[in-house]
Length: 162
Image (spheres, rainbow, N blue to C red):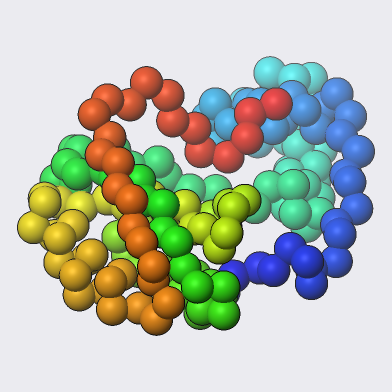
């Protein structure tokens, strides 16, 4: 499901204290750290750390815990970025469809005339071509697609680091 920023209520800003920031920094570096070890590192009890993490999750500060998978190690060797120009009346429909495609790793509505910016991972060029020809190009309102291939990754970050 795509969240429409214009229709969504503006979330209140969550005030973070020093301990919340330390917890978030530690979890960003190691999401598998135990409450006990984290508490020892920042000077709180295990119960206090657990309560704070639960609160941060309930407030939407922590969205989820996940594993970061190296795509190359599992045979996904083609990484590409796409700029997709779409007729405005089809933007939401196409975004909904693309967000469900397994090859699509990220999808953003960017400034400019109805432009989606998308990243995709593919095992080879044939899979990327099949995705383009059989899925993307067949969607309604696609006006143009610009593709840029990743040569080398210097930095990649999941989530936000404080």
